[in-house]
Image (cartoon, rainbow, N blue to C red; front, side, top):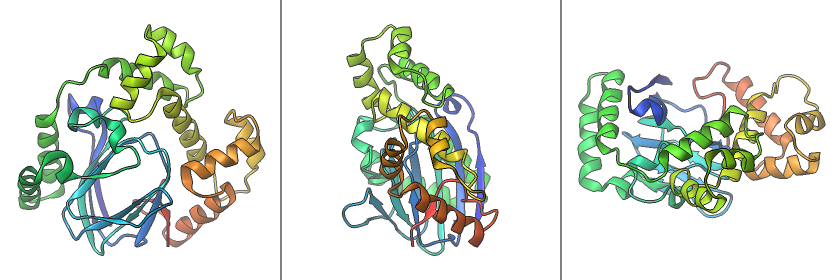
Length: 279
């Protein structure tokens, strides 16, 4: 697969980790995406893909792409073969200034791009993208579109400051202490976080703690799960296992097995790092 990415310029660089272009044959027809503190926007330029959010229900078709706020559980992404798309990986607060609804409405409930921006706008954007000559030109088109759609969000600076503090400690810092430093009530913070991030500060901290823990795993070596749980600050291993299943849909042991499969089947693949084979 071809994968091209770059960090956008100001002011989007304060909202987005990177813009990307993806084209080719996916390593698996279905990928499992564990929950992470990272909203996502995908503009699809090929055949429709399918998404199954959570563990229940049937997969839904997304012809023009999707937007999803900070997820709280794993979701399944079904690629067409071949696939072609552009998109953006957001900071937890980054999607909110680009959508007309509270982020909580897109938490574990991906919306089509048409649902958030309207059919004429999406058709025009896809036309400009497909008319671009090269991936970097397409990313410039996407960046211009996103910059044009920015809108003011109440409490964005406060949420960004607090979420950045949570991220700096890997979700380990007590939320109450960060809230006191922000000089805002817990009720107001929870309300603004759900509107901007999609989840409460405590839920975001849990997501960061889990993500930092999983990304630090070396699945090629034997794993002492008890030590991993203790090192991440979990009260006991049972609590850790429950959290693991909630965020991935898998037990820790099964997660390691599936991750090893990806490394074995597709060493050095551009998508390796977070997605897991679901088929």
